[in-house]
Length: 424
Ligand code: ADP
Image (cartoon, rainbow, N blue to C red; front, side, top):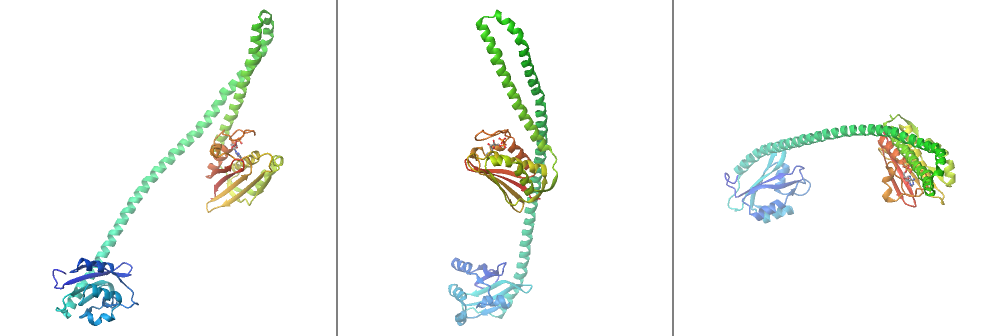
């Protein structure tokens, strides 16, 4: 336009995509200061507010020719007045850029020099250019949209490829994990099973040693008269103290180890047991458990409160073990010397039942809270009998039911065990 036409200045304003305002997009013949004013002064596209010739051309889709801005200056709205004044516009011509009956923008030209007058042929020429601009603009918008869509498809395809690769990776990992898990279960079972055989041997042979000891007692007695006092004393210490003590140690260690192997086997069997989901009324189940604990509760002057437990669909035996163990512990670790209080409750979220078993017992030190879920781990005062198996079994079972377990506790105040199980 600048090269081919003879106007001193020209500009293009375009409506934004929401048709909220007309903004300056291109122009020539303006000083940098003028360009800044034009850029910073978009015209709001409000048909109901007073508007000047530019918006008249846009809304009415008719060219507007102002031969002398001074004559209409007082009728202009403030923002048009500002533009006329700041850009020193004397006469100008603006044409709507239209496509498919829709106004897209404005093409305007002017002579800063009032000597030159715009005439009808200028209007015809500019309207022709505006029409071509309308088609080009439309095509450009279509093209931009196409490019945008292509980019979107490309980035979507990329994202899909990344997701597919990640999924493959995680599937492979899950498969590996499953294999390792199965191997571990078998390993635990086989090892603990096989460990029992030598243990039984040790137990058997230590019993045999005991019998042998008894059998040599009589012949040894006869030999004593040939021994010195010192030798007799040594024989007494070995036969009556050292050997029986060693055998005692062997026996108690064997018994302990046997218990532990049984524990591991029990846990391993628990992990391998097939689950049989059924509707379980937990209120009834926990009430029945409390009855069997009546004696222990009495000795701690303890009361139990059960707050609205639901019926859930899950494996009954697992639930019995979970709640049984947690209630047993709740009572077992109550503090002597203050009346016990145990509360069993349940909260429901969109996806889970969160059960809580709260007691006002001994509590657990912060550094022990995680440890107590490990097999054979015990914490705090060891003045109550236990094998350190209960919570490890509970954890295994909860995990098998796709749930999770955690504990909040304050030493000397009490503990709450939470069990979250999926609703579906
Ligand atoms: P056990 O009771 O045979 O020791 P558990 O696995 O059931 O084995 O518990 C592990 C340890 O966790 C217990 O030795 C005890 O220190 C602690 N514990 C469990 N439940 C409670 C509770 N309700 N209050 C305080 N300590 C608890």
